[in-house]
Length: 401
Figure 1 (cartoon, rainbow, N blue to C red):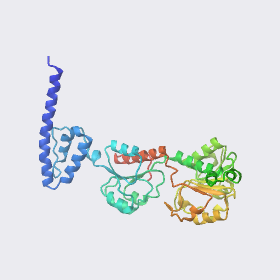
Figure 2: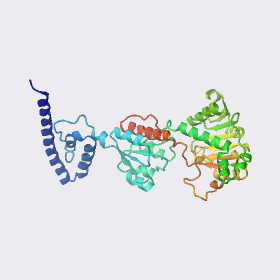
Figure 3: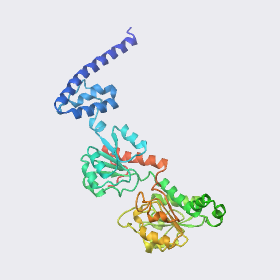
Figure 4: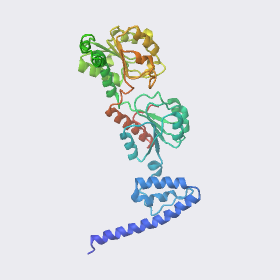
């Protein structure tokens, strides 16, 4: 009876002989590639195969032949699709969570980090890429025009006004985003701003640090949120989540305005008003949740902001473009409202002499409302999923165009 050890030895020797013979054949192919000017193709194939499938490297590399001639050595290719497995390349413009990077790599995509995210750098580095994973940096048509192989752009987040959607659509480039990735984080940040305003947390912290312990509690009167009116202008996922949390956690009254919102479609306990002017008048806290587009550009100007209660606070965790900042500064200096809290300003980063930073009743965060650990992971992963869907020939779950 033949022992198992002899069987295994026979298999091992057979594989060794086949691999050696295949290596010798491939060696001659590589030499011919270099002589005939195909070194770039040969090196790319060798690098990717050796890294991703070293056991079958000798078999797979034989696919590359010279001058397009296909050599199938021992037919050991396991339905290897070289175009999908290692000819797809995605450029990541800024640092993202590893969840999206790992997801794309698991699908055989080469992932490259851009050396910088300025337009000139991206124009050079997008040339041979099939996809882009972008954050909030500008992606104008001149960048897209340089991506001759570009098939998809995955937006790390929700808003996409930094991307030239018209150019992408015209040139067959799919754009996807991640609308479910960060709405809870932004809603919590909004409520954090509301609490900071109502409890005057920053004012009292500064007073204590100046040694004004008594004045910290006596002069800066706080207000309770229970029973106060929270006006939400824009009532998408984030606005609805803010409403739910404010009602359940703080017993606030919710008023909402959105052009398409009707009372019969609103959640229980939410009062829908018919105009943005009415919404501005009734809120103790007015929170903005609108996208940036032509209809909302500098929408909140002096006439509209003047409608707010003098005791009210303005909260913006949406887009800076929707506020006329010159008018806002005037409103604040005239003490037309009690204060405000913004997650973004008219420039990023702001100059240190920006007049907004001189307002002592304005709280500012550096456009980080969506940057919780959980949201950052989700944005990276969901953007990567959209990219993989398109590159593998499927319709993305969250298409923009």
